[in-house]
Image (cartoon, rainbow, N blue to C red; front, side):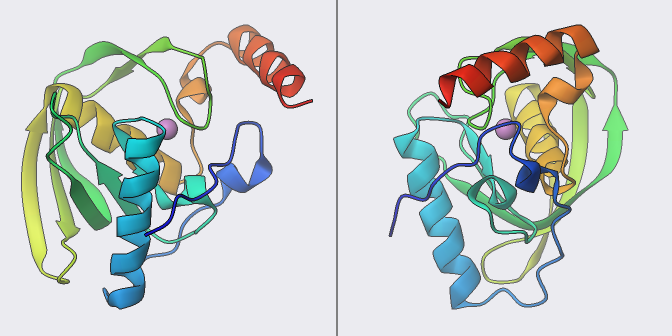
Length: 164
Ligand code: NI
């Protein structure tokens, strides 16, 4: 396994729309394992392949308090949403920035597991937020896109300065 480099906002590569995975094979399983290691090392509760500059539809999440519930989803799609809730979010690609985002409270997701088997998952709370956040990454979208333009400008300047 390997720790991968995480792209930071406003890197334009974070705007790439990821392609569906055609076949869940050893290459994808290795990618998922590397993404989990990268996520735990950061540390964070979720990571999308886009963030490690691989533009295929793979996400990993672990929202458990003990960090012992790794989940990997391939080609994840939200097929139903219910309710709304606001939660403070952060992102490994936008270090040091936290802000409130409104998302669906409950979701049903369809995806493939690492054996290529289809699955459906009902999620709420932090897991639902995290899955929606990571799927956004696969579509080239970041949580700061939900904030006002003024806030986003401030964040972009702050991170540009930090990158020097
Ligand atoms: Ni993120």
